[in-house]
Image (tube, rainbow, N blue to C red; front, top):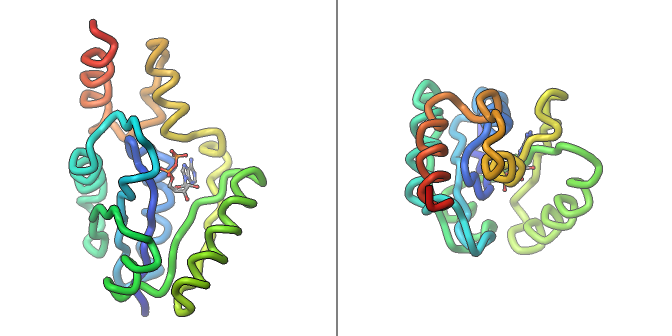
Amino acid sequence: MSRAIYPGSFDPVTVGHLNIIERAAPIFEKLIVCVMVNSDKHPMFTPQERVDMIKEVTAHLPNVEVHYSDRLLADFAKENGCTVVVKGLRAVSDFEHEFQMALINRKLNPSLDTMFLTAEHQFMFLSSSAVKELGRYDADISDLLPPQIIPRFQKRRTETSGG
Ligand code: ADP
């Protein structure tokens, strides 16, 4: 059994992310969910806040650890003994970028494989940025985020919209 890493921005963690975590965790001895900090210059939540939220919604999964990193994924994986990168694939549009990333990561760290899990059909449209966009218009996001995350999301939304 090996250790895997599931990287992303998780700004914030959605039910789509949680679905991937719940399906990947039983496959590995340990699954490290890693908040990668440099990908979005204007995040809604700090890396620590994102880590705390993921910890909260994965508390029922004993082999899941949550970290954040501003380093190269390939290096972080090597240092943490991870041999597999887990990615969620929503549509063909995700594939090209993810395929390129998988090849780059393997070039940087030849012992690293990427495993793709297909999104559940009901989450195929779901991304953190879509939730943030809907939030801006005060649309109903109650079945898109884990219930524990909703009060924090609504609080931050009103703080940042000035009302
Ligand atoms: P996003 O901001 O688009 O939600 P992230 O960088 O946080 O993206 O996503 C981290 C990983 O989770 C990526 O592999 C992404 O493809 C996957 N992912 C995101 N949303 C979903 C979903 N609804 N279903 C399956 N996988 C997903």
